[in-house]
Image 1 (cartoon, one colour):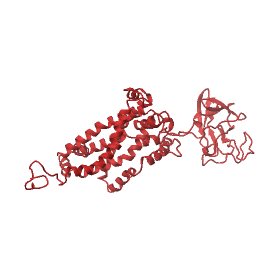
Image 2 (cartoon, one colour; image 1 turned 180 degrees about the horizontal axis):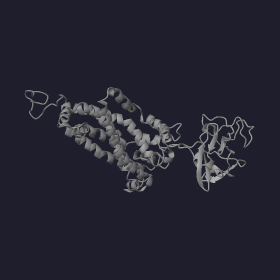
Image 3 (cartoon, one colour; image 1 turned 90 degrees about the horizontal axis):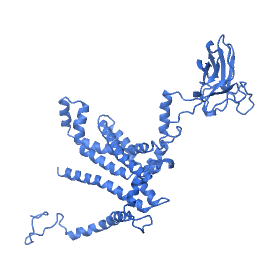
Image 4 (cartoon, one colour; image 1 turned 45 degrees about the vertical axis):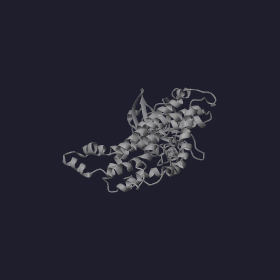
Length: 445
């Protein structure tokens, strides 16, 4: 019997047809175009890159291993190597863990399919588009960057923000610098007095939206009253140290009474700028503490040198967590439910079922996802190139980006670029071999 059926009568026993019944020559003929294309686009570039990596910048002089030594001695290139190590360790792991959590949890909610669609949707976006989106998300200005808008909102919920940055008194005002950014009255105040505390330099957007026209405070027996207001009339015509009808009160500004270097009383101005201090403030000097004038909290510098790599990894996870979720969900659908029910009947809680039954059964799928993402992040280029600003691109550098800069940058060095390409190939090969061995082992089961 041959592989394709019974042997032909009279045919030599040693010669057999292939399973498809075709001759090997014909099969090779069909494969030749693909092999030629593969050789031209893959094998030849790899071979030439290895060859070119041993030559100098011009390509005329033999450099030996100098280009490979430069990879680990040049600060910029070595930063790329370190960042690639961070990418390989963090990004695939986080994306796989999130994919596993999403896949398990979506089985327990009614709208699981819709949730999977939403999580997987970023995969339909190109790296270029995702990079542009996250460049805007990570904008430093909270009015433009979503990340900082959320961060500043949370911060201001628990920490009071400054009300009047860059506000200051004029030389004709009864205030003078008090040290540390504060302003204090030139003279002590007395009981039953009505104090005027004018300031200028408050931009219209920084004024409270519910501020009212300033008015003179009403005298109160035994207490110190006063008005803190913006001594500026829009359109001109105002008089210094006089409350004009179009001038607004500095709502919320903090006023302290300082005596012998200690704060003995404090108050906050109302919407019309008026405030009242107790009798203990008599003889004290009134002070605007520095906290009234500090710059408002503008969030985190996501694209600064220290956070640029984690920020870009976050954008990568946003894209690829859906990919991991879909593959893991497919594997989860094939898990025998009777094993899970048997574990529950034996007294295992949900966490124990997940950790000791579900995860071990999903190990082959998790390995596929993890290895695929590891190969993918070794080649990461688009997100880093687009998201990282020029000032932080050296801190976010990765091998694929350094390969591009070394090969095609303003000071190109094809020898170093080829060495980086060979290094990337060497890093990918062990992961590929592991994946091939695992697939062969699975096929034998």
